[in-house]
Every structure is written in structure tokens, then in C-alpha cells.
Length: 214
Image (cartoon, rainbow, N blue to C red; front, side, top):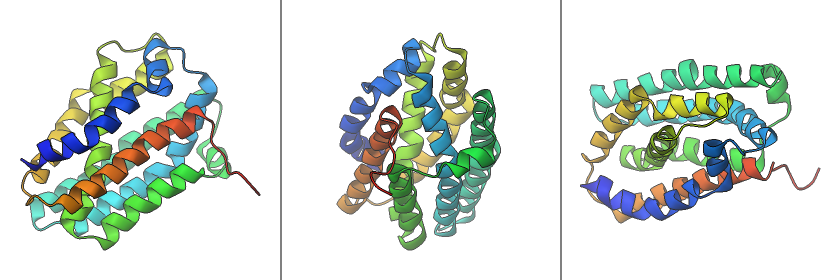
């Protein structure tokens, strides 16, 4: 099964992600609120492009079921995940419009651009390989963190979204699609790039990343 090959490639990155102080701080409540605020602001920029990437992936799909899945997931990103971000921003006293004025950071621009490009210009297998690590790593992180939750109610709220049964079932369906593909080493390279961007995204929030000039 191609999912086993892909996980073998991205698992070392996943281990680095769950060991990162941003994630360990989410779990034990020690994560500085400013780092989480930075993450949420960047999500306000990233998620619309992520939804575009999902829609583009669906447009490349070979059959109605896969088209429907990614169209539905694109809508879910806007309706559920983006709505969560808006509510989290409000918890920080920010309107979405104010958050967007702060602008996306370098990693957000790079990651979103890579996903949109891969899903818009690649084949369906390439698009799926690009998008799967984001689904899968968030599901794994959410499941792992949900086991211990967080003493911080704001962090626990975020954890429950990605560790919950509904999101886990969504990811399971995407992995079934992945297993329908023919093995191709090039797809593993695409997935590894996305996984690395996942680590960079968490790290950027931890460092309060900004542009180095201008």
C-alpha cells in the first residue's frame, strides 16, 4: 500500500514536529500565547489558499467520488477550520480583517504557494501526494494531543478540532484514495516537501517569524 511507503518517508518529519516546543507547549499549556496568536494569524492567510488547493486537487480527480470529496473538504476548510480561526482571533481581541492586515509570513507564503501550484499544475497523483501530509500530520498530531489535551482551554479547543472523530474519518477517506494510486517514487518526494513545510510552519509560529527586510 502506498500509504505505508509515504508514511515511512514522512514519519521522521512527524517525529520532529511532535517534539517541537510549539507542540509540546500546546499539550502542557506552556506555549506562550504570543506564539499561538502568531499561528492563528497565519492560519487566517493560509487556510483560504489551502481550500483553493483542495478544490484544484478535486478538479484533477478521475471520478465523481473523489471530486465530491475534495470539493466537500474545501468547503469544510472554510466552514469549520476557518471559522475556528475567526473565533480564536476574537479570543485575542482581533477581527479577521485586522489579522489579515498583518500579512502572511515567509513560510506561509512558501507553503501555500507550493500547495496551490502542485494541486493546480500537477497530475491528480501529484496533487494528492502534496495534500495528504497536511491531512495526515494534523490528524496524527490531533490524535496524539487529544490523549492528554491541554490545561489551557484555548489550546484544548484547537486540539479537539483535529483530534476529534469527524476529522479522523475525513483523513481516513483521503488515505483510501491514496492507496488507489500506483507506487511512484516521485510522489514520495512531493509528500516529503509538504511534510517539511508542516514542520517549518510550526517553527515559524514558535519564532514569531517575520520578513527579514522591508
